[in-house]
Amino acid sequence: MPTVLLIEDEAALGMIVRDSLEVRGFSVRYATNGEDGLRLFREERPDIVVADVMMPEMDGFSLVEHIRKDDADTPVIFLTARSQTADVVRGFELGGNDYVKKPFSLDELIVRINALLRRNVAIRPAPVSSEQLSIGRYRFDPPKQKLLIDQREVLLSYREAELLRRLYEQRNQVLERASVLIEIWGDDSFFNGRSLDVFITRLRRHLRDDPQIQIINVRGIGYKLIV
Image 1 (cartoon, rainbow, N blue to C red):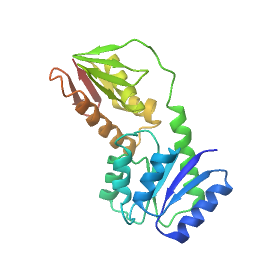
Image 2 (cartoon, rainbow, N blue to C red):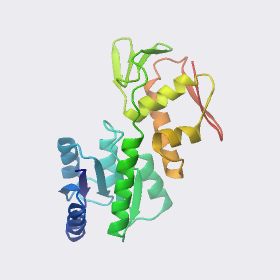
Image 3 (tube, helix red, strand yellow):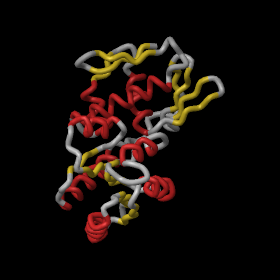
């Protein structure tokens, strides 16, 4: 039974959504503000998060920013009445996976939840090798999702590790953006593309202790890991 963490400060709407999800076989944890939502996320580790953007204590964007500091893979759907493109883009840049504008159909929300849950399972292939890879001064262990340099160890998220593995396999060559999006994110939509850009930025930050390593953009095509 998939667990949904629902965070919505409008009590009437929250109860309706919670009841509808439970009728359809979901286990629901419910919070009415961002701080309680973050606490429940850390305690429950749900399969998916559905969060309003405008909430007391902590807004939805700040909530997801905290979540993404140690969990890059749990799908997040934002619920909001805000419809400006800048808000939508910001939500995806912070790590959101989908954006449902109020008022919305409960059936549509449930379809989107199921689609993200299926995608999150489908993108996880079996580990390819137990061998550590050398990337400049770093050692990279793909199955354990670890990046090591000197005595320091960085634990990568699943997507970070998969993206770095593909960059390594194509090192000093272009890794096509579209193929990465389809293989790791499930499709090459605009919003997934923004998410990929965020993950590239994270990898650059993880690898910054070796100035001989670069991940460069190849405009209109993809990325290149230069070692």
